[in-house]
Structure formats: structure tokens, C-alpha cells
Amino acid sequence: MYKHFLVWCICALQPWVTMAQDVEKYHDLVNRAELYITENNEEKALMLYQEAFKERFGHFSKDYYNALLCAIQMKADSLCIEYTQALAKRGVPVSFFNQAHLQYAGSVKNISALYEEISTGIDKNLVDTLKLMILEDQQYRGDNLAQEGRIRTIDELNYTRVVRILKEYGYPSEQLTGTNMMRNGRRIGTRNDFDVILTHQLKNGHCELMEYLEHSLRSGSLNPEVFVTHATYCFDEEQRLGCFNKNQVVYFQIDSLIFTCDSPNETSVNKTRKQYYLCSLDDLKRKYILLSTKRENNPIRFTATIPLRIGN
Image 1 (tube, rainbow, N blue to C red):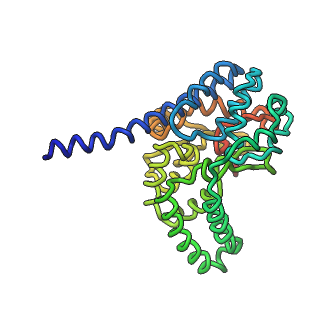
Image 2: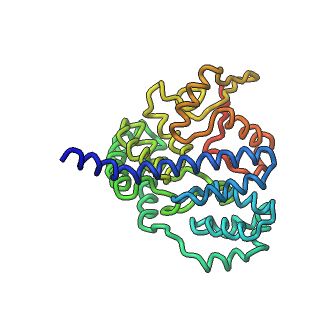
Image 3: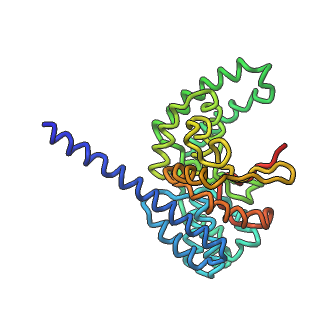
């Protein structure tokens, strides 16, 4: 009897283990692709993106976007169409592709016509629910002290909604809610309204929600870099994911001084980062150097948060 039960448990866990391995492979391939981008080797980066997108889950808009940039650079027309379609299915607006660095994609395939050919899986009811939640969440937060009671009441209501959403959907993926657009629709973001609401719940001490988030991370619907922003509030001191506290920050600048990890700490931090599909700190620094050279004009999108913090 016990042996039969043990065999059943192993069989039940197998799909979960396989999925986690697929997700880990995906993020490893994407990291390697991004490193090739820092070397201006879009051809090799594009090959890795093609391999990554074969993995069996939804993938992320920022990766489709970077892959599209590589496809444009290589004049890979069929891939331009494929990655533009992938973004369109997540609600990225037609106007996004009017930007100069993306216009080649429109010359390959009329973007408006392409939108007419696809259907999205965006859940309008879920999106409307999230809009209502963020509206209520932000209603009184401009005056935290005077409105403390109302804020607490809304947070309690939103907690019930958050738990219901996580139980039904897991973390609301881009396939369900669409891609978050920033800077008047000119940039692709990785965080959305649900993340703002989650942040307030975790700050209130609801760290039990991290179990749902980790499950979503392992199943591929939650971006590791977004996971980091939530884990910061609930991880133990030993679970450091960056050089400072438990976050993504690699450099800390005060006036003309720049502080970063020392080698022994980097080894420890990298072990923790690997558990959550995050690239090493050395890799992150290489990407940051590229981002910092042409911060405003560089179209490449690597991380949810720029790993640099400047303060007094």
C-alpha cells in the first residue's frame, strides 16, 4: 500500500519538476542571448531566443521585444512577423511599432493588418477587476496619516481579492492581462497594477502570499525580476539577491563613490540568485554597462529595475 502511494506521489510530482526545469532552461537561454546582445552579436542572440521560445510556457514580452530587435537587425523577416504577433497578442498597441527602430517590422508586414489576423487571450473581466483594485488602492494613499483607517479597510478587501486571484489564476500573466506599457506606450514594462497591490499586501505582513508567487515563478508565469521586488519584503537576511539588503541593486552611489559587492558576498548571492532563475551579478553588471552608455536612446530591455541606486 505504502509503495503504491509513493509511486503515485512521484508520478504526480514529475510534471511539476519537468516544468520547473523547462523554466530554468528558458531563463538561462535568455540570459545568454542578452549577453550576446552586449557583444553586438545579434545573430547568436537570435538563435538562443528561438531555442528559448520552444519551451512549453508563455514566455515574456520583454524577451519577445529584444528578440524582435535582433530579428530586425538580421533582416529575419519571418521572425519579425512571429515576434510582432506575439507582442500584439498581449495587447501591445499598433502605435508602439511606429517608433523608428521598429519600423522595419512594419515594412515586412502591415501592423494594422496583422492585428486583424490575431486573437488575444486577454481576460477582460480580470483586467477590469485589477483596474478597480488599483483605483481603490490608490484612492486615499496620497494622505496616508489622515486616511489610515480607510486605507486599512481597502487593503483588507484587496487581500481577499488577491488571494482569490492567486488561487484561480496564479500570478496574472501577460497572456491574461496584457503587456504593461510605459512612457506613453513607447516602452515595455514588466510590473503592472497587480504588483503595486501585492507590494502593499506584503508590506502589511502577508508573506504567505509568497508561496503562490513562487509557484508561479516555477511554472513560468512570473518574471524572476518581478519576483525579486516582492521577495525583498519577505526573504530572510540570508536570502540576498543583490549587494545591498535583499534586492536587485548591484551598485550603490553616494556622490562620487560607487559601492558594489565584495567577492565573498557575490559567491553567496549568486547561489541564491540561481535558485530563482536570476543571472549572476557579473552578468548583470555587463548588461548594466550597456544600458548606462545610452540610457535614454537604447531600445534594449533587460531587467525590471535598473540595478543602480543613487542617493545621499
